[in-house]
Amino acid sequence: MLPWHYNIPFFCIFLCMTAGILMPLLRKGRASFYLTLCVCFTVTSLSAALCAILYTSGDSFTYQMGHFPAPWGNELFAGPLEALLATVFSLVMGLSLLGARRAAAEDILEPKQSFYHVMLCLLLAAMLALSYTNDIFTGYVFIEISTIAACAIVMARDTAHTTVATIRYLVISLLGSGLFLIGIVLMYGITGHLLMPQIQEEMLQIFANGEYTEPMTLVVGLLTVGVAIKSALFPFHAWLPQAHGSATTTSSAVLSGLVLKAYIILLVKVFYRCFTIEIIRSLRVTNVMFVFGVAGMLAGSLYAIREEHIKRMLAYSSVAQIGYIFMGIGLGTDIGIVAAIFQILAHALTKPLLFLSAGRLSEICGHEKEMYHLRGAAWRDKLAGVCFTLGGLSMIGIPLLAGFNVKYLLAQASLQNTVKMWIALLALAASSVLNALYYVPAILALWTPVSQAEQTPPPKNTGYRVAAPVLSALVLFLGFNSKPIVRIIELGLSLLKI
Image 1: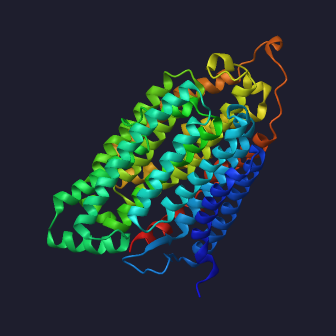
Image 2 (image 1 turned 120 degrees about the vertical axis):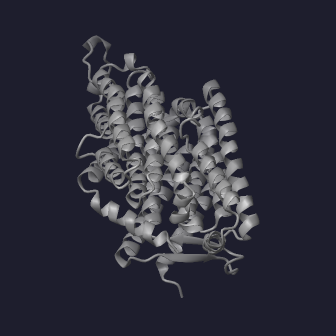
Image 3 (image 1 turned 60 degrees about the vertical axis):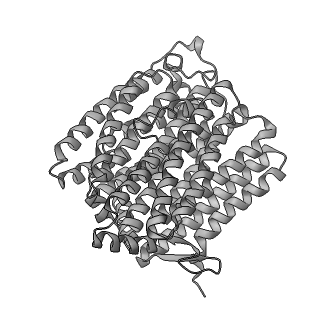
């Protein structure tokens, strides 16, 4: 009999999908909200327990789905890294839902709220599956589920802006999905397998014999470009600002903090478990990722500097932060990939904190989004002001915050690659300055005093007062004590190697 914890990955995915199926039976949005919240925190608890067990034992396992063994069946692969990602994804989704509950209740019509929570449950199931899957086609299936659910939570607000943003998001995202699917088809045609370990066996033999080098380079390129489009890497970011800027706050926090990263996690697993990271480096795909990552770091920040709409500014900031991830992978060193995944975790905590705080500050200013109209908002809700300031300083890279450790790890990684070292270090320095050029003015505007006549008592928001301090504490934890997380990432990456 399998140890009990082997069932956790499947149970968490199954729980999310079952809750999504049952959700439409709940007529009131309040009931579906609490059910979704319960699912998120149940998955968080189980995933945290799994992470502790696997990290302590230094082990990983493969879970067979159904009665069909490899290479015909379907499998999940779980190690401490996958369990850590599942913990963060479910916790942040639960906190995003809790922190922006008031905004969602105002933005989404009561009859649609239960269906909105259906999409959130399916989105969480998709992200868990993308983290745990050991089958590349299953990964594609959940990419599509994630795309549909993401479009639905953008459109849930039901305005002209969200409709246009959703259509743009869907069109560009399907282009990325199509390229990813073509890559899978070509890979299957060459290897005859869909399970990652069996694909790797064929890959090693193919490259040892010097066969199919050009087609496999094309496959890696298609998979990488497909994920780059879906994760809004520059210059494939055009859909992002409108989608995140016009959606309700929960949707913006989940999309920016979590959904974009789940696709990159699948790509990293494909690199390690299908091709091996050595083959990826030999194909020089990392060089292309490095160039586009650096370009994204700088371009995203330049766009954000010109933006006065606070949520669109945060969306452009996400384009820059995605650039950090691709630059880390593109450095072609082990510590570079560690830094990239640490950035995924840091951004998954910091950006939802910023979106929730921005949503709260906008709420107390009559739902204004322009920075001019948000002047002095931090004085009216000091918790939201402090949390936005904390998140902004972390994005800049101030020491003792999560963002600083990201840049420190990336700088360490760049020192191991003499060819890319100076470009990476200069890009990190320039990006930090550019980040400061839009976060510092925004923070100063929020704390600029305004006359008492313009102020009205802010409405209470208990959910935000719970969610924001938890996210802030986690951002501080990654800043003060990043070593345990780095060790989990390093162990998880070593276990991905077959």
